[in-house]
Length: 125
Image (tube, rainbow, N blue to C red; front, side):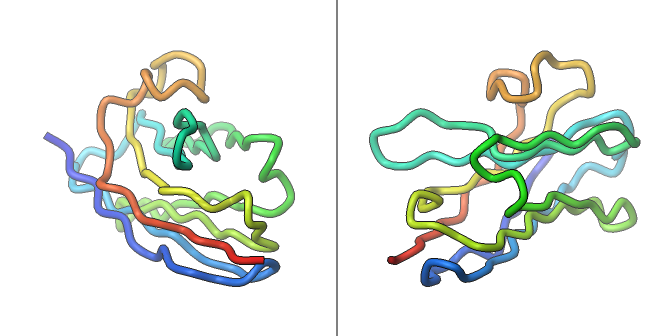
């Protein structure tokens, strides 16, 4: 069983920055992909960014390209999401997720069987 522990959420004004972290308990970190999804009240969960742990591409939702950066520290089994130039529409619960490398389209939540508990990000105007 894999456990994912997120941290770093909070409240910030528009234009500000936050950095989310997600630590995975799994000792074998190769050939997986990890990512960030978010869900605002009344909306479906959507992909924000995904990274492949053994090298490979990173993917971003169009709405966050140029503002958010996903990165990883393999030694710590941890991924990060640096969020800059935050907007009120970025307000949501942010979830860390882990899935196998070839688990379908990067943006589909169904391809990620392991999820963290979520961390709230609130951006005020």
